[in-house]
Length: 481
Image (cartoon, rainbow, N blue to C red):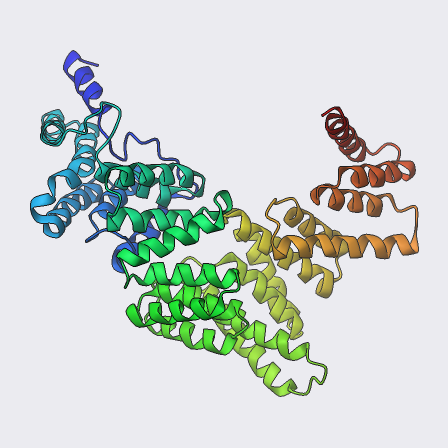
């Protein structure tokens, strides 16, 4: 590396932009591109215009080695920011110019790279922060949004960025809206009161924001404040009736309230908008499945013809869902179950195999857990392949997200083990299953008891012995504390 290029690299490393923030996506760049394009199309950003999204999308294109497209997007970012912010654009262009400097450097255009470095440095001289370690709030904001969009694991970093922006501009609409959104998505790490308080404050200064209304409504419903929740969700639908994100979240709100008919109306509206989001068919299928389950749970189950019709509609929506460019893998699992229920085992088995084939593409743990639970049910109830049912339920159990699907996996494994032990009290595998469930539930003492019993009947089983040793060490550590 020449002295000039070495000096340039040193300048580049001082810039604040997507190339220097150590962004670590938890999904593929291709999927990030799809998400960001949808966000741009429906303006899913608290910012004026979509300048920050164009620069973020440019970085994802760069990761895909699509540099020409990345350059076009950065130019579009600058144009959009200037159009949206006018005389206040300069501070908003720091990140875009930083990205441009890096892109030109990677293209070997050192002169242009230096030029963009100089532009950033000139802006920072014009707008000093007062401290060498602090950034302008506009930079904190864009950095926070980048962390938020690339990875769930970066949400805490995003929250920290927006807090720092708010320390400088306490009542800024954009930073308060962003802060509310990222707190909402990272609520498991923050008190519910903090999330609701910030959502309310953000809505006070941005009262017609449909995304905030929808999020606050959903959150309030979870805490049984149904009247206010309903009002907010309805306002969100009035304020942004064609936004697929609002339709999706509002529809899920109604479905979670056991109001599938209202959810169906909302999801069908989303479906009529086209195929920007591939989830509407899948969500409609879940609504009809909810109607089927509710009818079948009635004491006087007399509406059999209606149930058959709903099942056909449900299967039709699942078939449409799996045709999508990027189908929900969960849809294949649901399709396998529904087809098996209608007796079409050939199509059911085909759907199940498609599900298994596409399972490695699934990037979110909660989706993997759902799929394993559904596949477990497929084998447990329809193919009667107990070994496969146990394998899927176990995989779902070992994903540490204790939601409905996790509870179902634990419940079914217990049922299988109890049934086997009723026939043979010396069934070591069944005892080990109970040990595994107890361990997943956090009861190490009970788990050790079952593994000890399992080893009485299967003395040379290394898996049981290893689990028991680990449990004894855990118990020993607990007692010493």
